[in-house]
Length: 485
Image 1: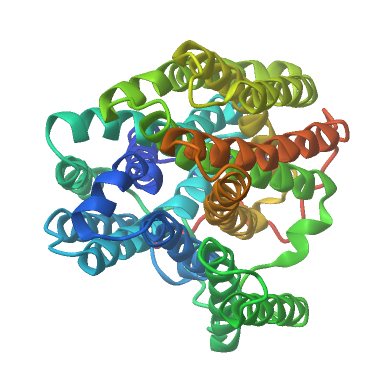
Image 2: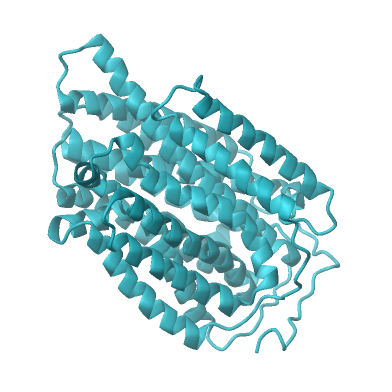
């Protein structure tokens, strides 16, 4: 792996703009989870409909991120960053002014488009402007952004909802987007090479239909059985489209996403672990607010404060893990973290009820995020470090696409199992109280999250601390000056 980095005037400022813009977008993934009950009441909708505010956001990201590898070869860094921030700004304003559920959902979609542009650009640019020996710290901070954004959403939004109302989640984000857009116009430099490859619209179509069909089917399972054509139809179409998309990429001279990144075993393993980690974060992010408010009857502010210590653990530990990663490598962190994740999930499964002391949920959430922080950043950094430079954008696009699919799948499956758990208790105990029914649904869904944590532990055993990677002869270290003007 080359130690060479592209020189820019202020790499730290560029990194800050990209990371903070991405943070706001990822915060937006789960920010409305704490407000779902308020929105359901205001717009007279059910949980299976309201969850589209999260699932739809992730659906757009999953569709758009694969295209990002192509966008980065057609548009300059400045164009993509500024464009992504402006779209995000427009989306938040539309959502803040929403008069009905459809308008709110459309605002979420527009914001998701902006975020879908920013996420892969951030990953690719950071790999280009910082040398490999500094990536542990940089990727540690980036890992903090990726995990803290969606994790902190319910906490911050709980305070905002209780004091100002849910539309102010978007107004505050809009103000921050304005400041970031001004900063980006001044500070962002072009660092990517524009090659303008031929656009394969068939690949774009297959990718869109594939990821869209898959996530739509998973989200619809919350309201319909898998035997319903509304579920298995999109699921089947999605799977077939993704298979055709993958097959087409392997036969193209200039694929939309270069799937050869998965020939690197540690990249594949790291991507899988990131996928499962994001799935757990987003599942927990939508389940706990429903539980704390619906079963334990906490206010939005109190529910948010219960989740704050877990987020604080993530905030403090991420840079430390990033700094130590450069010295110790990934293996120690991912195995230890995976064991801690399993312990956290076992605690959730065993203590959740309609009368659980709040401190037990607080401790379980802290334990869970202590483990996730030790797994996520090392997995991502180790995965991307395996790739030669010309595959950075493809590796970033592949990893970030799967992360968004994981988030959407986690949210959809969690709500589906939550509904199934409630129905199961109602069938056996028709006289159960509303908090008991809700707690049973949450506990049922956490069996799924616990199973995922066991998979993460098994995969962690195969992580290698050091993998020799030969730099491809095709790597072009020098970036043309004309591109960087």
